[in-house]
Amino acid sequence: MNILKIILLNLLLVSFTYANTLKEDANSLLTNSFKGKEKAIKSLASKYSENDNLEFLLQRMLEGKLYYIKKDKTLVFLKEKIQREYITVEVFSKKTLEKKSKYDFKKIKINNKLRSVIKESLAKLNLFSKNEDKRLKSAKNLLKNLDIKSQALVLEALNKEKSSDVKEVLEEIKTNLDAKYASSLDKQMEATKKLGEFLSSKSLQTLNEIKNSSEDKVLVQTAQKSIKSIESSKSFYSFIETAFFGLSMGSVLLLAAIGLAITFGVMKVINMAHGELIMIGAYTTYTIQQIMPGLIEYSVLIAIPVAFVVSGIVGILIERLVIRHLYGRPLETLLATFGVSLILQQLVRTIYSPLNQEVKTPSWMSGAWEVNSTLFLTYNRLYIIIFAFAVFLAILFVMKKTSLGLKVRAVSQNRPIARAMGIKSNYIDALTFGIGSGIAGVAGVALSQLTNVGPNLGQAYIVDSFMVVVFGGVGNLWGTLIAALTLGEINKFIEPISGAVLAKVIILVFIILFIQKKPRGLFPQKGRDVED
Image (tube, rainbow, N blue to C red):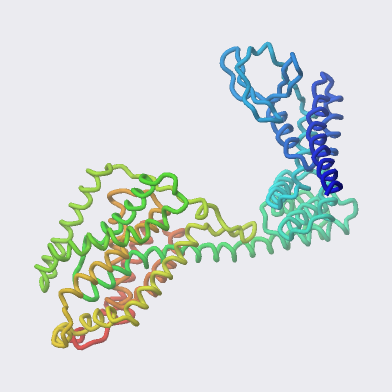
């Protein structure tokens, strides 16, 4: 035990000494000589490469904010300047010091050469860091600012690197440098050919430079082939990206239309307030974030069931108070629900504001999945696609495998016979309307992560929802799925050519023509009631 205590004590003493040493050695930066500072930076970088305080110190120095207190030579960085007084922070303890006169401090000045040395040292520190993200970021930065001086550093890192992601970027840097600065033509030719395998804009830029400046015809032809290869790969990934955006838009349309498909299919009610039920779901998310500002990361997950319940209750109220008095009169139902939609919009304007509100996106839904240098898939759209399919499968299960679903289908296919069998159609109508409205609310939660929330949010999706339902076949869930995805993809592929507005017009014309041929949509509902 005594030996163990001695070892632990020694380790503590060593670490204490190590921390103090950096602090003490950093005083070598206080010299007025630029050469002395350069020597000090290189020495610190070689001795304390694993110490995070060194990176912090060099960053502040590079920003021109590094000072020292004349009286005791303490290194500080400038936090705020108020006229002739400085608020500073001690570099190693990060403790904010009392406000002092600017005459109490002296700035550690740097010139252009020192800036290059600091940048090089920081690149080296980051490139050999234990943190993989840091190494990757540093490698990408080196690729962005290609410099033959960093060749030795890149080769050293390449030999030590184990992460395939970082290694790939380092390999691209090496190939770019070889293609630009290789001493032999053969090596330059080989690198130029290999550059065609990379997709970054930097590699394309290098190839264009070679194509425009080289006098060797074979090298120019090789560069042209590599450029063609990169452009071909970029076109392919651009297609994948457009398809992904089309899929995400189709998922949004699916969420917006699936509730309408249920209510329209069962009750034959043209519910013009469906968009406002989506809007209520979006405002539910906003309200939850306002009530629980400390739970932004979980707000979307909390909002999903809450929005389903809130929109579902509003839907049931609409059905009980308005729609049930108008069954069999579709025109009156359309006008009544249109009036309800206006009332709901005005209600939201009165409670919240006529202005759009921003809903915060949780960090786990922010950013993008970088597949390669060309293809980025945003996490929020990726989650919405997964969520839309999960909702679709859940609804499909309820409709096909539960007693409620059986009753809903029975009422949908033949209401009189269903009533004769003892099914309370009024109860089923209210419940179905509530479920459809609840799903609209859930769609609103998803939409709140793509756009700002406002009183007119639902209006943007009501027409699209009806188009999806009519195109897919009224009341048919599979039809709604296929129609939503098809319209989403068509829209995203023709939008870059025709523009957003014209794309909607083209889709509308396409659906009108399609309905002329198949009035009941892609997957018409079957049943005696429908056929009659």
